[in-house]
Amino acid sequence: MDKLRRVLFWVVVGLTAVFLLLPTLIIVPMSFTTTSTLEFPPIGFTFEWYGKVIGASDWQGALINSLVVAFAAAILATVIGTAAALALHTYRFPGKTLVMGLLLSPMVTPVIVLAVGMYMVFSGWGLVATRLGLVLAHTVLAIPFVVVSVLASSRMVNPSLALASLGLGASRWFTFRRVTLPLIMPGVLSGAVFAFITSWDEVVIALFLADVRTRTVPIMIWNQVRTNLDPATAAVAAILIVLSALGVLLSYKFREARS
Image 1 (cartoon, rainbow, N blue to C red):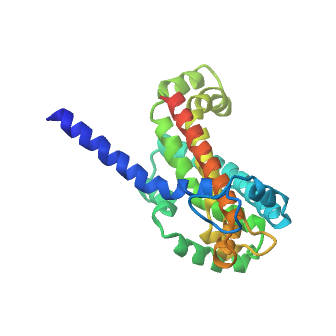
Image 2 (image 1 turned 135 degrees about the vertical axis):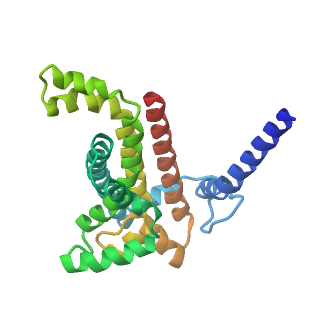
């Protein structure tokens, strides 16, 4: 009976995975078609559409914007999220639960609500249609992932190690750099990867805050889907899928190192 339950469990898991992943994976072979329209199964095999994406100035500009914004947002979110996670883990203070809820609220708040709110606030600050505005907005979205990841790592660290360092005369900054940070580094790196992926794939807030000069790759894909859907769009989508998959694998490796 237990064996039958295990078999049924893995059958359900496998069917669910196929249902979720198959529509996404179909995009990859469609990006190699030799026709000018999206077809499945694809006809022929060519890298022409990847060359078109790489050589097009509008795609190049969008790629640069996406990379700059994603790296900047990941760095900011990692610094802020790590500091917040360590504070939540180390100290007890009034309103700690409220602070935790506020830090994690972007994970459960509808993105369209965040987009409208950020647009109203950022327009008053002159941050709409700027890279800085996109970086700050994506940082807000990415911070919860860093907080959760670093908190998980911090709970696996023996607090007596830091206390021993302080007791031996080391400063708090030295203790953080040489003791605490190396121990929680897998969680920090994992959170940074998820922060990068969050910014890299985000489109709703970018639609509100970006213009032609600051549009990102997801915005370009959105525009292509609405106006001129061709295999070049599938090529970009395939690149995004590969990068996201590599990010998830990196995060998994970091979590393995932590455990």
